[in-house]
Length: 206
View 1 (cartoon, rainbow, N blue to C red):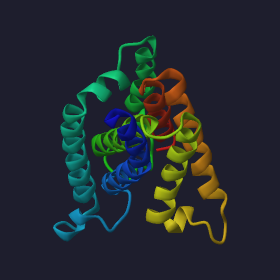
View 2: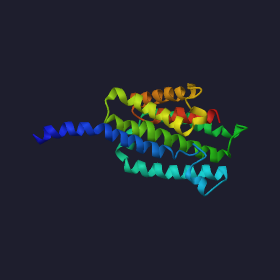
View 3: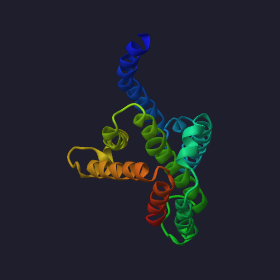
View 4: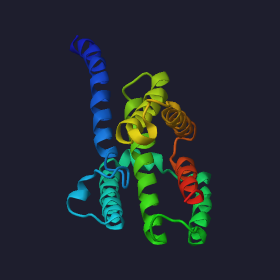
């Protein structure tokens, strides 16, 4: 009898659990390197290059720690597949970065920054967040919820670029991108294709 009564109770807690997970995701996502000019590193450093380096280093170390703590999910997200060979594309584009004339930072710093930033955003959002929400929400709602959170993060932290007022198109573009990346993650189950596309974009348009 207790098993039967406990089951509805556990189901009723799932939305609250999903909300707590989303809040945790947002707190971590705020640490994306170079996302804003109001990060905590600004309290101890002023030089832009040093700030980006330190933010990337912190995010990289946190990503390693989280990957270890979430090793079961991490193994599934980076399971061996033929898509791993796609990484040759951003690798080739990275080798061409010195040919870009107007990089914001020196080549090696830009490469470190973008690699950590993209991995951090995608691993947290379309990796861990999406997997945890999939265990707690109806399957048809997971992709829209993940995409909405992805877009909302940009709107809140980067209102100058993605604010809904007066032009909602940038925010809608983030929502569309979120829907696409979340769908690709569900379709292919791993992170390889998403990381390839995201890294390639930043290396092409550096």
